[in-house]
Image (cartoon, rainbow, N blue to C red; front, side, top):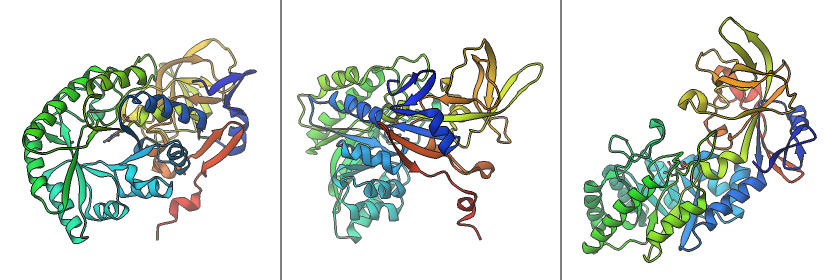
Length: 412
Ligand SMILES: *Cc1c(COP(=O)(O)O)cnc(C)c1O
């Protein structure tokens, strides 16, 4: 957490005091460190230097335009899952030939937009989708480059909501069906099968499931060749985990090395779609204690951030490390850290030992840079938080705090 550090008793984001930012911009407040984004992108990308490769940042992890621009300037491509994400990536100046499009439910309009933009390829997840892409490309008088997302039926050993490569999941095509899909694609007028794809899940803390999936894909690749289908791209998805608490995921270098060993002799361009590993620990959420409250069984810190701002604890039971923005070194106490929303599921931490905290003090929730703001909502008519991108001593208002007027702007 190099770029979020205490100096003289106050948390700093790079060269800027978090207390001062919170006073100026209010809370809840997302803070991103540009230097951390850059460092994480290059740590990941350079781990694959032995291979012909393209690192496509997974836009859904953090879609802020300023973040996308920063990563694009470092050489990142983008992995998108909707027309809205395509729009963002193009607005951020991402080269369309570095965009791949994943997702199980692409609509005709989204397919058309992606073809118009001339993205690198679609990661196709069903035969029905293949038919639609062929149809739309035909209407436009063009050819669509596609990969099939193969579901290798591997257990990624992660939370069930973010496991995507098991047979029971909605994602991809099982290996049997994949062969049929390539044969169909090869016969279609407006489809060019150029790659293979898989993405088995998120927050993986071991390399084994990736290697197991890769072995299945490489087997399939050999089989494809015997049918005369030569592909150029191998997209291995995202999913590398990060330390939120006690997890010890492999370092990107180790991940890159393990994959490179299996791939370096093959004539394939490798595509990677990391999201969390780049964005997760590049951002924090700052929140302020509105009230403290105790009953015979619990102590509560009622804070101004809530499940609408950061839903991960409510949705996945996930852990975010919490500290004081200005530590007071009081004796520890056990707390539930909860928001103002009218749901008992609205918590940011449960049964958490923290130093005693007083009303009006500020807390930092770490590892909030991925699937934080992007999953936020207006539930309880709460304007969405401000996002700041700190770059050295420069502060960029990456997204203004929403106003009450914003809440009703599209309503009659
Ligand atoms: C979400 C997603 C990713 C990114 O996953 P991370 O765990 O954030 O790295 C990559 N590819 C696809 C298809 C995804 O859906």
